[in-house]
Amino acid sequence: MALQTKRKERLREFQDRIDVSFENLALLDQALTHSSFVNEARAGQGHDNQRLEYLGDAILDFLVGEWLYKSYPDAQEGQLTSLRAQVVRNDSLAEWGRELGIGRYLRMGRGEAATGGPEREANLGAAVEALIGALYLDRGLQETRAFVDAFLEKRASEIGLAQAIKDAKSYLQEQVQSTLRETPQYQIVSEEGPDHAKIFTAVVIVNDEICGEGTGGSKQAAQQAAAGDAIERLGI
Image (tube, rainbow, N blue to C red; front, side, top):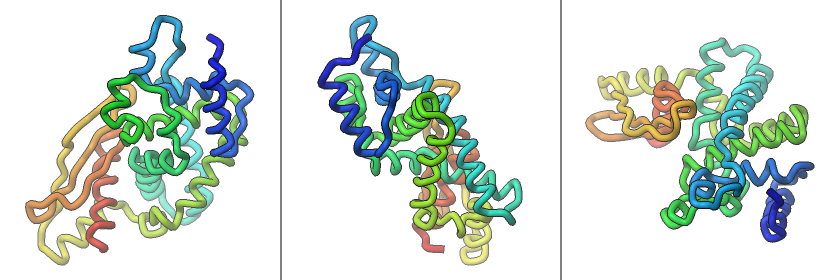
């Protein structure tokens, strides 16, 4: 299906914003199309971004893992795995999406748009993954790596990678037990998305109060994200 002129202009505007040029603009369009738009549209109105999200998730895991491996030569396997989970957790990707302004360019159904869809973390994180998948298909691994590495270099100090080199759950437990003589408790409070791309939300409870919340593609990743959030909130 040929892209309408107005949509092409919006996509080119987004390309300028993120400083990336697609040869196949339809791939970028697909990456920025939420499933609700396709569900509401007439037959033949294109595809949503779920397949690209799946691909982008795998590519991000690889590229982030590669970057961490090179950046932290003394880290062990478990430490690198914990770090990667924190970097690719949905709230981190959603924040990246906000920096890119991706929500303003997402096509979605009227109902989804009217209920805050363009700013919903699940949608922003999924769109970033779909963008990575589309970029890989259109520009190849080298340019995709440069795009991801630029994000990681910019965010490294902000997301506390050096401090997070220790497993977040273990670190939080040590700190809480030493000061409060309590053990943090974790609860999975929600799960969203299709079976192949579930997003879990976890909270960590200390002294009967929620002190951290996080999301991830697995229950363990969500708990790690919640622990990281608690560490930041508690300032420990």
